[in-house]
Structures are given as C-alpha cells and as structure tokens.
Length: 335
Image (cartoon, rainbow, N blue to C red; front, side, top):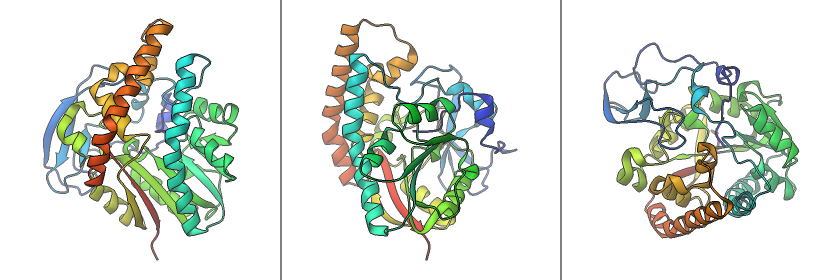
C-alpha cells in the first residue's frame, strides 16, 4: 500500500521540501501544459482544486502545485489501508484480497527464483501486511515498512509479520541485506522517488531484485476516463508515470529493467471498476463513512465485485496491447 501519512510528523518524514518554482523536477523545464483540474473524487478529504499538468519537454505528468510535506497528511484518511474486521463485507474482502494478491506473490517468487539472492524481502508501504503474510506462508523471510505506525501495528498483530514505521533511507537494515524490495503503488506518492530508489539500491544484495508497480498514465483507462481515472488519485498522487518515465527513472538510479508486466489481477480490473462507480467500492465507502445497513453493504459489495468481473476482459485486452492500467517492473542493479 502507499504511505498513508496520518500526521504531520509522518508527512515530514519525507524530508523533501517542495520545489521553489514550478519547473519540472525531472528535467527542469518551466513550460507545462494544463491537462485538467481535479479534486479528491475518491475519498472526499477536500474540495480544493488541483492542477494536473504535463511537462512540455519530457512529458512527465505531475500535480501542480504539490501539497507541502507538512500538509499532505490532511489528504490521507485514517485506515487508508485494508483493516480486517469481523463483519461479512470485511471477511469477503479478506478472501478476495488473498485471491488476487497471488498474482503479486507469483511475480515476486519468480524474481527471487531467477536471482537466487539471499536475504529478506522488504515491502515498502506494506500497509496491513497481507502480501508479506502470503510470502511468509511460502517460507520467505519478510519485513515491512510504512509511514503509518497504525499500519505497521496491523501488520504485526493481525498478519504476524515484522514491520516498522519510518522512511526507507532510515531503514534499520544492513546494506546488501535484501533479496528483494517491493514498492507497490509507492513511487507516485513521494516527493523524491529517486531518493527511495537510491536507498533501495544500497539495501539490495548485488543479485537482488527491485519490484515496482505504479498506475500507468499511458493506459487506455487514462486516455478514456481522464480526470475520472482512479489511478490519478488527486491529490495523493504527485506523479503520473508512463512506462517510459519509469524506465528512465530506474536507469538514472542504477537499475536495469529485466521484466515488465502490464496486467495485475488485484489492481487493473478494480481500478477501472472504481473509476466507473466509486460509490460501490467497499474501501471507498468505508473511508467516506457511508452509513448503510448490513444488507445494503452486502448488496453494494456484490455489485462492485460483479462490475470488477465485467471489467476483466477490457483490462486484459489493454494489457495485451501494452497499455494496461498499471505497470509492474522487475529490475536489478546495473552490471
């Protein structure tokens, strides 16, 4: 999960001030094209309008202006990650998440098998730790990190995986001690993604693997839905990477890409479904604080999963055309 930043202290852990000007942080160009203005359509944390712009030089899409590090926490609702509970909807969500997370687990297991590197698997932005729990059940040594102390607590207490609160640059791990580092939907939230990638480079074993996943701004979903695309997540996503943007960023930070995947069973169909009907998404309803009867909650959740299933064929097609709603990359240190 992305770093939730529940407090000013958590937000300032980023330790990266906003730029003094609105020049592109990637290439330094000052000319940008306004794509559209948008607000928090998903969780209703604010009615402020933010601009989504595209650099005229390198074409990187970004939020402008970015929220200040000491203010960004306001746009992250409490329990931004999945929190298990005893009700029927939560049990259904837990089962669903275990099913679709197998896609991520298989991707990471294949990377570990091909590298043969010793060490732990570190999940950055681990949220409640269910992904790490699935890896642990397969005999892997795992550890998580998240900006939220509450999320790290859920990982420890509910899923039985070690997790700590903080930033990756301050991780209490030795250099070259990680067999793999995973960042699922993390880079788009960071003021300085390159800082995290450089920190990951230092923590990885020489044969280790970095796995990153981001929403894909060159997807059909974004082209069709524009500001209504769930992958934008204004104002929490500061960057909107195309495939080429991510490849360039990894290259600059000392990595070479060895594998690219354009389909995620967990993310691609759900991203499209939530874009089309955010009010049906169980997580969105929980965070918005929607009051509903148990029967209504079950019916809405069933309707949401039916919509997710209906979105699978389209998301498979766009992924087959290398334009999936997300992109996942396996990278290793340059040789």
